[in-house]
Length: 468
Image (cartoon, rainbow, N blue to C red; front, top):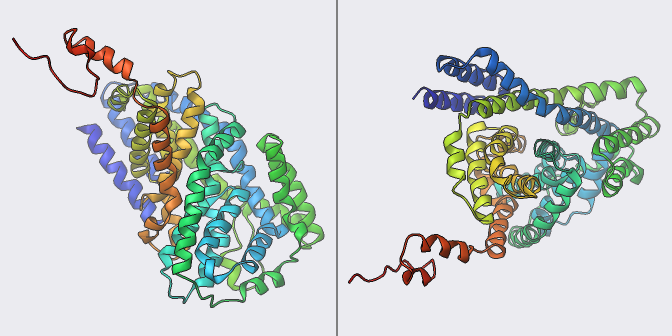
């Protein structure tokens, strides 16, 4: 009863902090303190619990060495005009008849390049919403396409924090994971494009704000060379260069472009990389073209550290053992995927952040995947195909709440974020078709329970041998 009460109170705290925009680390710390008090009352030593938390938090260290440079990368890409150039060229190539489709495709490309769903939404996403402002098309419909596209890259970009987190905690190769993600994403992506194309045809957007592209060209020197830092990331990723090295090379290229073409001083660039980019001029784009920086990633890093410590306590005390016992009953590959999906949804609902959902789900289902030689690879893929794309669909999870707030919409975007549905749904169907139930194993279990004559019946026929 005490654990149930703490779970409920913790959930309320996390929900309140996410809905009100408070830093979720405070709620996490409060929840951890409550759990520690309950565990101490149950006989655990405080020193032992601290050791469990320390063991768990060590898993976050490799992730932090990627997260902090990603913050610097985002800011310097802003200063170099890389992100503004992507937005500029994307907007100039758009056709109003295919606006919703373009919103999905452009946001997908931006998120793939910068690896951040929030970054993609706050740049190209916000610009698209401003362009469509005043049209007759429902804003949640456009927001759904934008947020779905934002998580396209958040899922499979080499500079994505979630992709790097999953590769670290599952001890798998990032680029191998990305290859597997592409294999399982092509069909959901194609279907999403078709669906958004149909929605576009029936809901043409009349663009009322044509001044954004001109505004960008006034604020930045827009040229194809601005895209070079993004091209560097893509090329080095294809060559499977370690992501930390790729980020540093891209930062170096962006510093050169920001200095020579955008005329920023080295001191200004260092300030941007540390504190985040911001424009000096008063412009409507101030709200969109800002952010990044190492400091912005410190908050994310703190959440990752606390979350891994929390998971370490759960693992050490076997607090969630009933869930693990339930998972032991799952035998098929498709059943394993489905159970990961269920656990991931619950973790996303309880944890209110994508990070907590990933770590909690990984901890609970990891043992199930260890039974297979390639268990870690499958675990990483299933986490990407479930919890990463499901978290934004939980209205109070900040994975969806923050983008919806940035786009000035509400949970009404959820039905239109079709890519986020299709990834888990089509992957489950694929696994179900490619890994049908093992009839031999099923029949062998039935033989132990029935007579020899009835045991020859197929396992799906619940026929009993007649009496007499």
